Picture 1: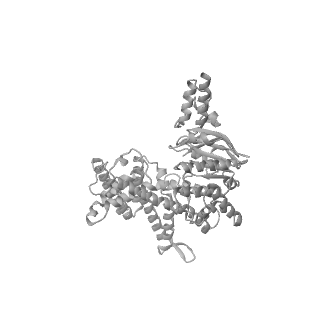
Picture 2: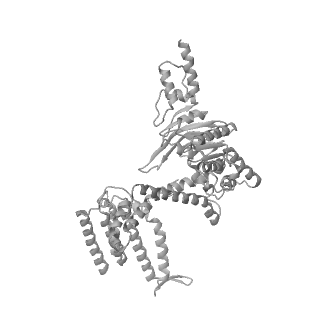
Picture 3: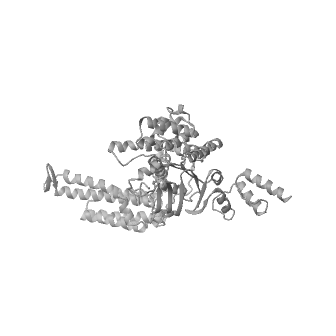
Length: 282
Length: 269
């Protein structure tokens, strides 16, 4: 049971003078229980890819399948797929419409046919998961602060209890505390056996929280692997629009000068490497 | 999932042509005159002359005739509807056929054809204006046209500015609507099944966030304009001043000659 993307291509305005290829043959697989980060520059095709994962866009060529159900036009499975794959858009607080937080969060699960006690349970479980106090339930979501609004919006997706959670730039506009809360949420979700697909342009964040990283550039897969493998690949190639974390650049330089043996993006590990090689020299 | 495919009525198609380069005031003048003249046109040969003028202008503007016809398609339904009404309600002595109390007369049918064609020509001609004039030029032209009225307190500059802003934000609004629809569909919203009332209700979760965004956007835009010391039309200069030169004279003169031909044909046929 996994989410697989096989040789997926998509061209906007196909056949018109303004046509533009957004995805050019992307393949990868995301497993339950992992955090997979998709990293790419602005215009690399990240958001187009995200909309393919729950069937908002039907593949032009190639295949996207969720738990063995393939995404096809007019497929009866499309609603099942959307229920299994929760999609949190960039600035999700812009989707808020309801008069109370409770009603907003219940929108998803009640669309999927839940009601009564099960629905109540889902609403409160989602609020607990995102760290939203239950006393917020009767509040007007439009009166909340920006950070609280975003939590309500994410909770409204979590309440449908999707097995796959796709988040498009969830960290945009969050302060440090908000970021910490977000990363611990993503970790908790993957530990509970959910598959988290985290789309971002922030390589540092991706290296920090992911089990695997997919780097895309101009609609093509540039690299796919564990954070360590990605770090090693990035010491050889330069990817358009991708900013290397300072720690990673530092460790590339030290490796080149023969001061350390292993590349790492973790500051503590790097300090340990320097210390270990320093004693070896003397 | 674009909401609107292909060319829409009122869209601007950028190209480099004699018509595109004309001063917007001359194009507005010609369009307004043509509207009056098309309404005066009664004879079918004169209408054929109009049609040929429209296609020649489209050719000069480098606009495919197919795009022009496609853009007027939504209006065509309205035109056919009014024409059908004309067939039955004009009255006349020569009855061709009747459905119950409704009688279709020969006179009615001719009137229906005439009005329908007239409306269609009108739509096509005005479509040419928006196809060849970009929104900011169009509002500059309108401002100049309403200019004399500002002496009587008509806010010409403000009206033109409002039009520019409205036109500028149409594509942005479509983009935002699409994004919100996608977000709600991802949460299981269903816009396709159920009766009319249920489907209308399904759009509430789209309309409310959209209104919120529109008001926020207006607020931001107002602040941005104020930050740049926008104070309305008084003492304002243009980056691209409107220039009425010999191409404009030629265009207006040619149109005058054409109008004379149409009026002549209209009278003698």
